[in-house]
Length: 419
Image (cartoon, rainbow, N blue to C red):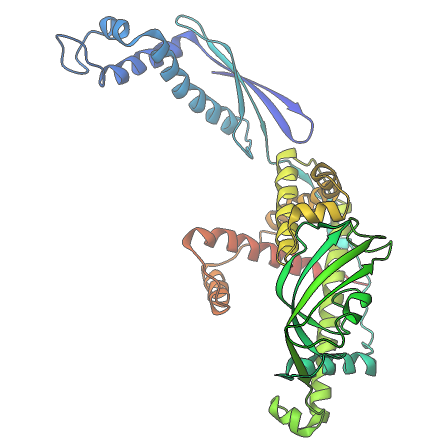
């Protein structure tokens, strides 16, 4: 077998593979025997007819197809092994020459795992902001008020609604007397004055009782996030299904004790520590991202298009999940941001390329540093995941092992000199 390799941009290769007529002749014979074993030839038991009779009965088309389906994969895998390549997907195959007494020549085009040229990543330095995190009183107060609202009592009332009340409403919206798509809701929760809707809409909910309806119009600002109604006057038809009063607990020692603290002072300190921990976590994540970014800057590699496209799709799927988890259809979201899906794909290409490069570089550093994950480390991680109610299947083990190895690689990078 002869193999020629042509390197293409973006870590893609084109292999030209040639199987000699002599080697191919053996495959023709094997293919004929295989097909003859399942072909009814009068006067002979299956598989016992002379090959020339079997060939005549089976037909050249079936035999040719069997030879190609057998020889092409075998020759392709032998070629990539010989060239020490790691394909990233199924190859694009094109038959150039084939027939009895002839050679089989075909091309196979495929993206392959690229080589990564590591720069002097061990000398990369990042600023380590170790200054004391300053937490303002208003930040602590905001956390406590959120906690206060989460632990409040909500009681139905027969009076008219007022600011800070919890309402459940049915509503429809209209533009030029025509219903707006995806803008109808039932038993929709809203707290008057919290800013879930525009202020003018929430102001119109004040002074209503249960089962009372109302029609009104709202002029939306020109910079409203939904571009379809930005700067337009929208008509609403609502019906109040429930009016409830929110009774906030008093911020005192008794409330703190119910929340598992000794007193209100300890609760405030706990809120402060929670903010500090979150701030420290975000700072650590930022420093890690900066470090990885600088490591990638000193490393060189090609980016296979198949990996980039797969990463773009992953980013889109994540975005779809985030959008639709908020009750918004993804098509509507694209309309709101005035983008076609093709434009979104173009926007995501650069971050996708960066993610692919990070993955390739960290994987190469992992190999360079001989970082591995033992079975006991893997088992411990799986126990941790399962303790968080996550289901881990046998086929997930190697993926989790790889993720742990990459984490260990990043941890090693973080231990390198930091200014």
